[in-house]
Image (cartoon, rainbow, N blue to C red; front, side, top):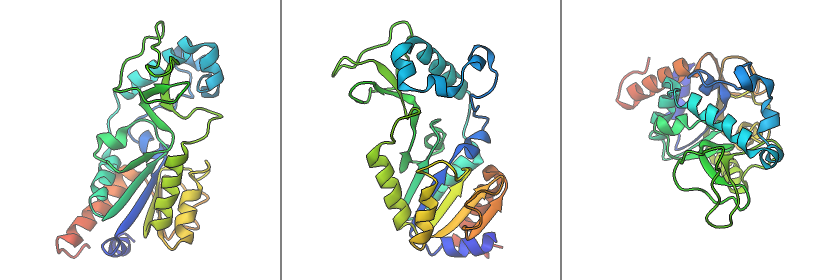
Length: 250
């Protein structure tokens, strides 16, 4: 099946990729839903909300600093690097991710849409102005926005918040225009991201799913590869390179 997909890839100009928690899990990114010490007493839904931040910003920032420390020890896996390489293979390429860990950028991806933000960035809780640089936040002395005086918060989408309209619109545009669409490591359940591969398929795109298990998207996909993206995507790109370099791709 890889060879058939490579035949399609070499003739495509526009490609889009949607990634979810599965690709990050292969790097060891924790889900933060376990029993990790103090934070095992809380559910993410109790901390990753504006109401939690307004009522107790210190504890919210302590949690996010803890998460950042954990993520700082995590590195991109071969699946991330394969997607970084894939970006250079097409005239038009968009990587759409639901992950906030920043691993795609570390692996070389540039044309990215981060649907849920990035845990390493900060913004104003009042006016949404971005804060320059990845500054470290002291939970006991949370800085204020230089523009409006609001408190600084993590630049992620919290429970109950809408996705950035410009980013989600750009994601749907990329899906609509794609000749080839990959869904990698995502459950295909969380909206609106789950609609992106469906939109691409209906617009005539070849739909490829790479996942550890079947999802609601699997029957719709033209290609379904079951297994770790960190193994499957590098194999696919190796065959693609061989084909582009004039090999038989077999």
